[in-house]
Image: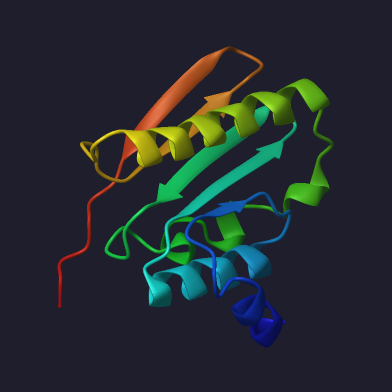
Length: 130
């Protein structure tokens, strides 16, 4: 799978991730980090959703934030179209902001509780350059 992903993504300038399993997300994160390609993750599970935009390779790696023990496979709970639509629109807005505005915010996770209409922004620290 890694060889296929490497070939398929070789000319990509930006990646939008909408997959439903951690193994693929980890692979995308690794490939994008090695190439310094921005990757925009999103996921929906029931009435919960999140967005994480790893725009720079010194942003925290996806596996460091979302570990299997505290991030269940998205296929375990049904999602609904309106929720998927909302999260994907927010993900697309993050890409549009990245493409059109000067970078002025560090890494963050947008955690969305669609049942209670709560949007949480969790700020993350950038990793030090080695």
